Image 1: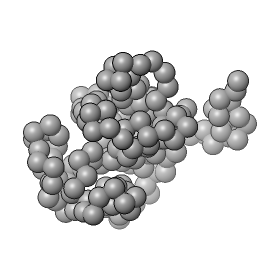
Image 2: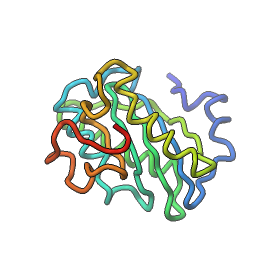
Image 3: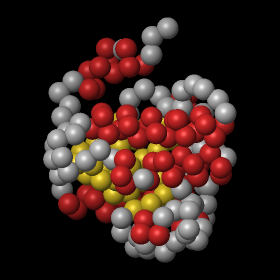
Image 4: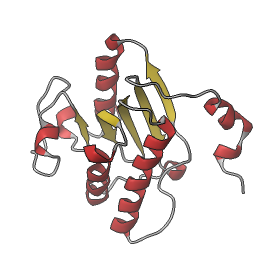
Length: 175
């Protein structure tokens, strides 16, 4: 059976893609068949910990992210000559291995590929970050952005303390 990444349209989306140093990308990737893989707090927590580790981003910096029950959004800044595809594949692999261990299962966690949009100006950064962290509120999962535990942004104090040690209701400019 062919995967979506085998289709001519999917390949056409990737044609000519390059990753530029210091460029910021808004990235979205979805769970396999839009399954709610991260609906369980335990699974979401272990996946969030795997995703948020700043030492695992291969020459890129994760500026902001949210892990939804069936997808992930992130803002990624490139600091070296690493490719966007490599960075996203590494994140998806880390999260998938962690989730599969937590669920004592094998199998796909993510759909192949991802969607990305390069931010062209500094003025796009804060609105993109707000879009990301407000996703749980727009989806009706919480009444207030700060009530959702599976997100982070460099503009908050969440990152300095680590996700595990933080209260469930962080404060910051994006809440």
